[in-house]
Image 1 (tube, one colour):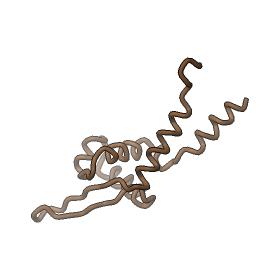
Image 2 (cartoon, rainbow, N blue to C red; image 1 turned 135 degrees about the vertical axis):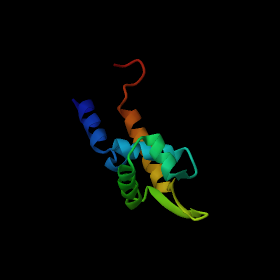
Image 3 (cartoon, rainbow, N blue to C red; image 1 turned 60 degrees about the vertical axis):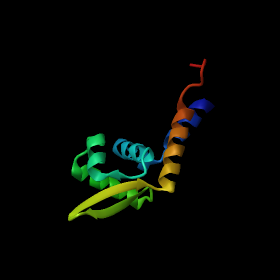
Image 4 (cartoon, rainbow, N blue to C red; image 1 turned 45 degrees about the vertical axis):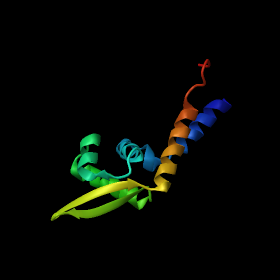
Length: 107
C-alpha cells in the first residue's frame, strides 16, 4: 500500500501551473528556443489568441516566462522567453512524471 501512497503524493505534488496542458506546451516550446514570437507560439500550440494570452499571463505572473515587446518598423511584436525559474519548474515536472513510470522490468 505504501507504493500507492507515494504515487498519490507525487501526483498531488505536481506543479499545477506546469501540469495544465496548454501551459505545458508553451513551456516546452520555450525551453527549446531563446525567444519565441507570439504568432509562432500560437501556430505551434494551436491555441487561440485569447487562450494563448491568458496562459502566458498566468505563466508570467508565476515567474515562469518573460514577455518581450518590441517594434519591427511600426509593427509591435510580442515574444516570450522562459525564465530560469520556469526552466527549473519544467525540469522538476519532467522528473516527477518519470518517477511515476514503472521501472524497467517491473510492472
